[in-house]
Image (cartoon, rainbow, N blue to C red; front, side):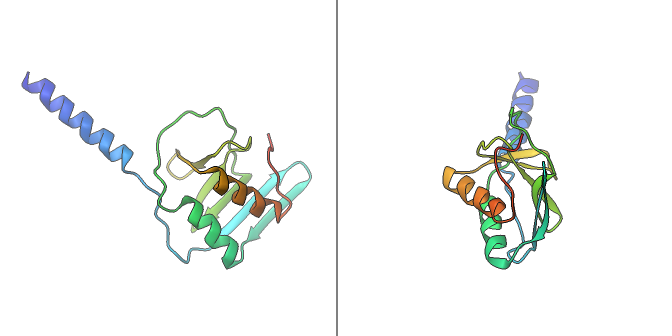
Length: 128
């Protein structure tokens, strides 16, 4: 009985640690957009206004382990202070944090903003 209680406590602790993982970024971290698909090739250091928008999309979001069927690639991504985030290539509202291998969910409005920022540099979705 004592072992079962201890195992349950350890399990709850591990579950809590996984659930509490959130994206934290430096407020002034530079953002680089990357889009390499078909005939479009863009590697762009974003101006502060767009950088702030992308940081705002991921900042504070909960990270979780998942196995989504969406496609993700570093060829369609944005990097914030060395941390690579890959939006789903099929327009799902999921972003993969390649640093941790975890995923975060975004709202439809955030997805539309992300798509628009990529479009400003020739990127488009879906790109699978």
